[in-house]
Amino acid sequence: MHTTLGCRLCRLGLPSVEVPQSNVWYSHLVVMTMVLVPVAMMLGAQQASLDVRTSGPDLLVNGTRIHTFGAPLGGESPSQLAERSALVLKGFDGKVQFTKKAQKQNCLVLMGSRTVMVVTPAEAKTRNVSVATLAATVTQRLINASKLPAIAIGSSRIELPESGSTSLALTGWATRKAVIETQKPGIVEIQRTEGAISLTGKSPGETILTIKFANNCVEIPVSVMPYAFKKGENLSALVMGNPADKSAVAGAITAALQTRSASPTTNRVWARVLDAQPLLPGQTKTFRAKVKATGPNCFPFDGEVTMSVTNIGASVPKENELWYSNEPERLTKPGRLYYNELPANRSVRLLYHHQNAYSVAQIVRYMIANPTDKPARLAVSLGDSDPDRNPTRAGYKAGNQFLQLRLRGSAEIIDVPPRTVVPITVRRLRTGETCSGIATLALQGEGAEKVAVVGDCILQQTLYDGWHAGENFTGAWHIVSPKSIAEVRINQDINENPVFPEPFKDLQLDYEVGGRFGFARIGDVPIKNSSKNTSLAGNFGVIYNIRGQLKNSTPAPAEVELLFEASAGYGSGLFVLNGEMIKIGLIQPKQEIVLASIKIPSGTTKPLNIQTMPLSGANYPVTLIVRPIGFELLSQQKR
Image (cartoon, rainbow, N blue to C red; front, side):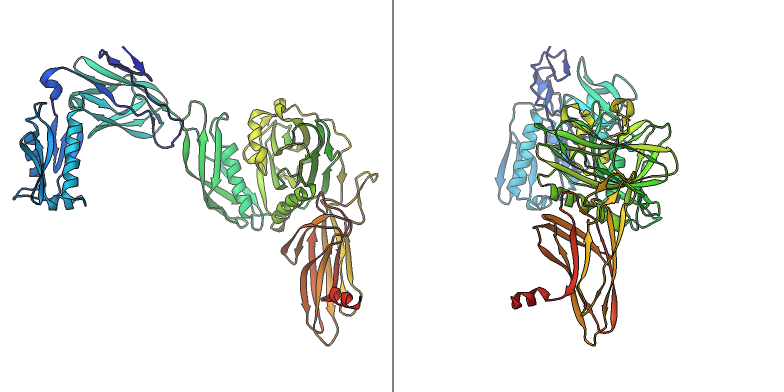
C-alpha cells in the first residue's frame, strides 16, 4: 500500500500519486491539493459501467453533467430528450466508441451506431455555439465520463476554516452507491450534492473523511482550523481633533486591528482602511478595512471587516513642556537616549533627532512604558520621518506631518495595558542615516497616574522579533503589539534629560505702507531649560505664534510680500499663514522665498497670523520680512 500526502487508498494496491504543494493562501476558500484519486473496482463488464440518470433536462453520466437540453425536438420536450439519451447510454457495453457525425444542418452524437443525441441549430443556439462545437463538446464529455473509475475524488487532503465551506469533486460510476462519513463527529458537516461533496467546518480539529464502496474505501484527512484573524466583540478606536483628520482615523483603525484584535499574539495581521475620512467632534462612524492575517495552526484570513471610530470631541491638549532628545545627535554606540515620566493630565511635546555614526546599523526607538497596574490612555500626534541621509530633509518630513495634524488638533488615542511597553517609533538606521520625529503626548486622567517616555539606541539583532515589523511604519504602535516591561528591561535612571518649560513663543510682525520693512527673527533668542542652566540654540520644536497688522494709510491701494530668508544657512521651512499651510522645501543659505503677496486697500488694516516651528536639521535663526512688492526688482535697477 502507498500513501501520498496523507490520502490512504485502502486495500487497492494502487501506485502513489505525486501531488504538488501550493504556497498560495486563499481566505474564505479551502486550501486543497488537487489530484484525481481513482478507485479501480471490479473487473470485466462492471468496469465498463455507466451510471446514467436525468434530472429534468440534465443528462448525467458517472456523476458528471454531460448536457442540459434547452430546445424541444420532434414534439419532445428537453426533459424527454434527456430521458431518450439516457435510455441509449444505459446500453453501453464498454466496447463501443463515442463519435460525432455531421448530417445536413444537424450533427449526431453516436455510441457505436446508435444515436445518443441530435444536435440541431436550435439546441446549439441555447449555448451560443455552433452545431459542430456543441456536438464535439458533448462527445468529449461522454468519452471522459466513460473512462472514469468507480470513484474519482478531487483532493487528497482538505483544510478549511471554522464556519468555512467547500465542495469536493466526487465522480465515477459507483459514487451514488458509496457510503460517505467522518470518523469524528462535530468537526465537519457533510452534504452530498450532484458530482460533489459539500463540507462545512464546524469546530477546529482533525478527522478522516471516508468514502466506502463494497469492501474498498478512500480515507481523506480533513483539518478544520480557526481563522488567523478574529476581531473580537468590542474592538473600536478613538481619535481627537476638530476634525480628526483622515490619517488619524486610518491610523487608529489599523492600530486596533493589527495590535488589539482577539487574534493569537503569534499571528501577523495586516490592515488597510478602505474609506477613511475626517471625523467631527462627538461623531461616531463605521469604516471598512481590508484585513489579511496568517499564523501557526490557523487558516489564512483575507477579507473585509468594519470598525467603529469615535471622535471624543476635544482637541489635543496644549503642551506644558518641550522634551528635547538630541544629545547625542550622532550615535557612535548603543545606549540610552531619553527617559522622563509623564503624569496624568499633562501634555508634552517630544522632539528627537539622531544620526547613526556607528559602523553598523542601529535601531532607534522611543516608547511609552506603563509601570502601573492600571491601563493608560494617551492622545498622540506624531510626525515621524523615515530614515534619510539628509538630516535637514528628515527634520522637514517629520515637521510637515506634525504640523498638518496640529493644524486640526488631530490625534490618535493609544491604550497601554498595565505593566507593558508600546513603541512610538522603531527606526532602523544604516550608517549615515538620520531619523527625526516630533510628537504631542498627553496622558488622560483616567487610569494610570503616570507613564514613562523612553528612548534608546540598540543593535538590530537585540530588537524583539515582533518589533522588527514596525521599522517601516510612521507610528510603530500601528503594527507592533505591546511587550511586558519585564521583557523590555527599561533602565529607569533619570538623567539630565533636557526639559524646556516654554514650548511656545509669541512674536509681533507689523508693517505700515510707506514705512520701514517688517522683520521677525525665528530661532534667534534661545529658550532656557527648567533649571535655567541650559539654552536651546535654534529653539527646535518650539511653536512660534506670529501676529501683526498690515496697515495702509495712503490714498492708494498697496501690495506687499511676505518673504522667508534662510539667514543662517542651509534649511527648510513650514508655515501656517492665516490657517493655510505653506511648505518650503530645502533652500540654500541667504535664499529668499516669497510666501505670499497681500493686497491692502487704501485706508484699511489687514491682520497677519502666522505659525511656524524651527525644524530639526535646519540652520537658525531665519527671518520673515514684509516689504513692498517689487522692491528687489527696483534695487537691482538702481545697481
